[in-house]
Every structure is written in C-alpha cells, then in structure tokens.
Length: 482
Figure 1: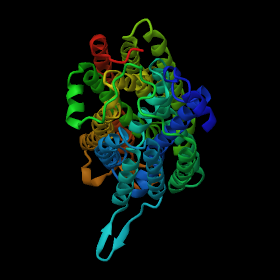
Figure 2: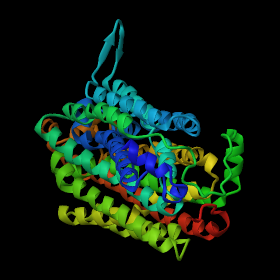
Figure 3: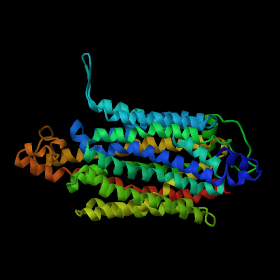
Figure 4: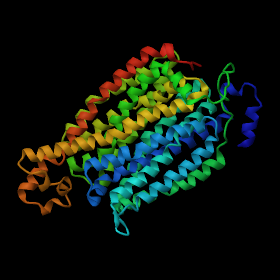
C-alpha cells in the first residue's frame, strides 16, 4: 500500500487525480464510511431499544428525548469546534483513532446503566445513562470534521461531491445496522446486551484504521493555483463565512432537516410499537431496517444525481435536495396516519428515500464556498448549529410535545395527571389498571406521539424553502468549481 502511495506521489499531476492510487483512495473512503456507519450505529442504538428501555427505567418521553437528543448533542457540539481546529493542522488520523475508541467504550458502558448509591447519595439510572451518552457525544465529535478534511485531500474537487455522497451514506446505513443488530439482540436477549454488542467492536476498528490509513499532505488535491496558508484565527474563519449567505441559508435548511430527522428517527420505534402493537425487534428489523436501507439508497442516488447535474447545472447541488425535502412531507403524513403497518412502512421508506439528498449537499456547499484553510472549521461550524439545534432539540421537542398531548388527552377524558402515567399504559403494565383507565390509555397512548410526529414532519417544507434560497446564492458564493 505504501509503494502505491509513493508511486502516485512522484507523479506531478497526481494532485489533479487525488492523493495515492485510486484503489487506495477508495479504501480510505470506505474506511471512513464504515467509521461513519459505526458512528450512527452507536448513537442511534438508544432509539432502537427505546421501547424496552423506557418502561424498564421508568422515564418519560421528554427524558427520552433528552437522552437521544440534547444530552448527546450538547458536548458533541461544544467539543466539535476545538477538535476541528486541531484537525485543521493536526494529525487527523490520530484524532479519529482516539475518538473512535472513546465513543465505542462509552457506548458499551450504556449497557451498564443502573441506579448507583454512593454513601447517602443515590444516582438514578437515567442520570447514569445520560452521563454515558455525554461520553459518546464527546467521542463522536472527533469524527466528521477530520473525515471531511481527509476526503478533501484524498479526492480532487471534481470527485469530491460523489465521495462525500458515499461518506454521507453512513447516516442511513448506520441507522439500518443499528436497527438490524440492535433490534434482533434486544428481542433475543435484552437492550443492555445490545449496547455491548455494538460498542466493543469499535475498539478493534480504531486500531485497524490507525494502522492502515495514511495522513495525506494538507491541501494535496487542491488546484495548483490554490494559495497555501497557515491556519487562520477562528475570528477570521467566521469572518470569511459571514460573507457567504449560501453557507448560512444551507445551514438553516440542514438544521431544520436534522431537527425533523433526528426527532422522528429517535421516536420511530417507540411510535411503531405503541401504534401498531409490535415488538421492539419487529419494529427495528421489519420496518426500520428496510426504511433505513431505502434512505441509504436515496442518499446515494440523489447525491449521484446532483453530482451529474452539477457539471451542467451548478445549482443542482441545492435544488435537487430542495425538491426531495418538499416531496417527503406527504409521505410522512401518510405513514403517521394510516392504521395499516405495511402502508406505514411504505410511506416511511419513500419519505426517507427522497429527503436525504441534503446530506451530501450540506458538506459539498459547506466546503465549496470557503477556502481550503478553513474547511474543517466551516464543517465544524455547520455541525455545531445542525447538531445543537437540530439533533439537540428535535428529539426533545417531540418527547415534550408528546407528553403535553398525553397529559391534555387524559385530562380531557376526566383523568388527573397524577392518576395515570404513560408507562402504566405499556402492554406489560396496563393489566394492573382499571377498565376505565385502560380505555383512556387506548385513546391517548399512541395518539399523543402521533400528533407530535406529524407536527415535526410538516417542517420539512421549510427545509425545502431554505435550500431553494441557497440555490439563488451559489453562483456568487461558490469558490470550488473544479
């Protein structure tokens, strides 16, 4: 592998093709994509096992939204920018290696979450799990900024969009494998075992990554006339971004899309179990897995389409995802209102297929409107906003709205909030309730979450609008056109 790299480095035109030989570049891309898949398997597993975890730990939908969203996203976003600043000049392969090992370890520790008593102080299982999730967030903050920077140096500008499209498939493929593995293990064993099964292999992957991926020269694949400069001050990087309206319009669209996407995906298993009476494993394997696969194919297909159209219509990198995001709204409405499980799966699958073109677009636009020296920082700023607002508050919003609708629903039916909790409506506990309370559960248990999901899905229309506005600015703001 080293010889292949050296032979390509000796070619003065190698920067036009990228760093290293084509097979090696592809290996690095697949390795980074595998890591991104692992990234989303580990962060998404909590949503998969939620239907079993929530009643066992006795937590509310709001608390679950905190665990899947803000509890993870806060440190993830805060640590992200400093790590990206290090990635702008530091050894990106080492950064990623350490972070992969950290988040994998913390994922495994989530399986040990239980009430802890230290002297006279008792720490509930919710808080233990929250601390583990914070650890996962800190580790995963060191994944995407250096990975995007590595891809930018391994691949020439003309190939970068497609490479980033392959990398972006990690989001949906990660969700697919989280459901496929986590759902089966949860039904076969329990939710705690699922965390061990997906967390521990990451430690081995971290070692293999460090041993096989070479740190490329910074800026190697940029055009020959690109001026190389030292890392700029953060204020100067932000100043450059303030001159690029396309960056901020795209960031707004991507943030709302993340708000909707993370919120819906965090509660999708719980919704399917409540609304259609299936098990956690059935929801994960038979519904969520094919939906995630459809979304992954859609991510690649829309990224490929945008790349092909980009050569003749540069604005396609923005208007292709705009169309997809707008089209997803009616399919999500159909999925969350039908009583037929198969129809719900079809609606979720088509909605996921058409909407994810924005993932490749957000990275392509985010890096294409800035100079080489601030790429990692621009990506970190993008992810800071997207993850803090989108990931942080999307699940929390759905959980909180669901709880509000639940309380309002039982109140309207003449039941006081202190008389009935949502977890008492769980199939494993509902038998202990009176017939009247069981009837109340039947009216509001699933409907409250359904209403929250529908409210959130509507916001995809706003995402579409922001990407259309981005399209209007790309001609002025895009720097990287090769």
